[in-house]
Length: 185
Image 1: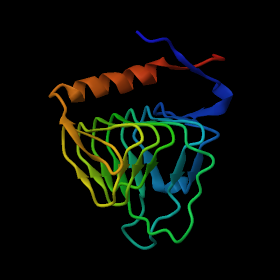
Image 2: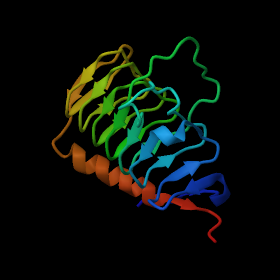
Image 3: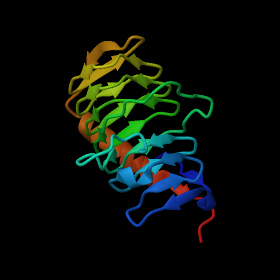
């Protein structure tokens, strides 16, 4: 088994459902964000729940499933212009690498998105998919189940094995287990 990944307890807020959220993450509009449990949001990650449309039926903007891992965000990236934001749903056992910018509409269950990826607006990533590091997925792309995409612009590389669901689920659970407070109280 891989060694533990230590974090400072004072740097993270832990919820009753086991979510671990860095105090250095930017969580805007938290009332519009739902975390499914056992999710880790790393330092520098940015989640924008404040960009929601107003009116009835537009309450939850971002919904993350269980065992989601959001890597460190880039503190130097800024966004300019008007936002046109739509709800985003992220399934269970999703790992989003450090420095990635996600504007997808839906990310299925058991998905791995590498480091420094850009996932364009309204993209749909189906279950058990993998996006390689440094990939740029254009807006409105649909990534099929059990597909590996990479490149800029992102394109199909290969089919993934049927065991992808079990492999990704094992990795996200193992990462969560390894993510331990350094200063236990």
